[in-house]
Image (cartoon, rainbow, N blue to C red; front, side, top):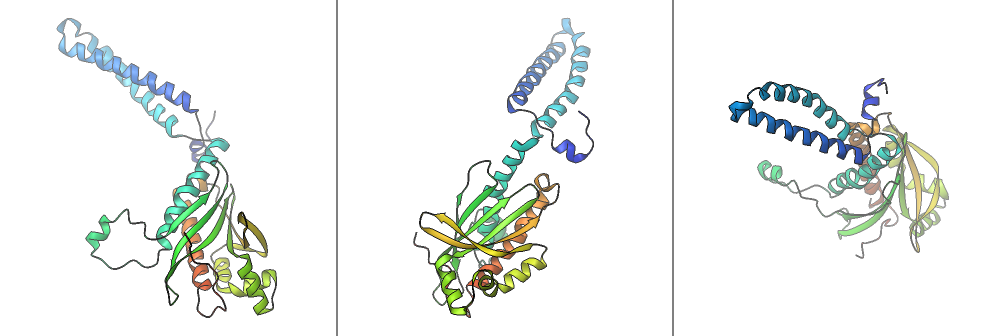
Length: 277
């Protein structure tokens, strides 16, 4: 198969069983070659084996490089599904856990460098099927803006398509209906008024917001009103970790603005309920 570009090289795939078989074969040949080389060095009667062992070793080096290439190469829809699940289950929660925990206390830089496993107080639960392109997050975060700080909870739905990422900003349905009643607005007009700064900041960062809201059932008897923020992804998003990190960082900035606006003391109500867990 011809390789037309670097992105094509990145997309090559080999089944796991074939990777294992190739690895076993190369390892077996390598062991035999090392054995022959050892005999040639330690047994004068077989010193003529040395040149043959060296030649065989020279052939094994490029073969070993090919095996490494095949072992780390991926392609096709199965590879995209695995990468999608990895981003949704690892990169997104790990980044959110740090970013939504508020400002950490000051400490010596030497101590901060050692605190690599400090996850803070944010806790994230997920609803996700391996290989699916969507993930629903239930995020427990510390409300530090209220007079009586408490743990609160909100939901976020992320859909990671091949060329587009959808982020669903959710608020409790009953709270949203109460807000609309107080402001005498309905649907998208009410959501836009409540989170105007978040929406304008999101659009300024290159995302688009669908001008509508819908009802989302996050669990039995628990309903949310949601607005969809979407963003186009680059063609090499699933093979470029920097693109993935940039997207997550932009999403985190949006969520921080969303939560700050929701917890603003000027709001006529409290948007997110206290965590009962």
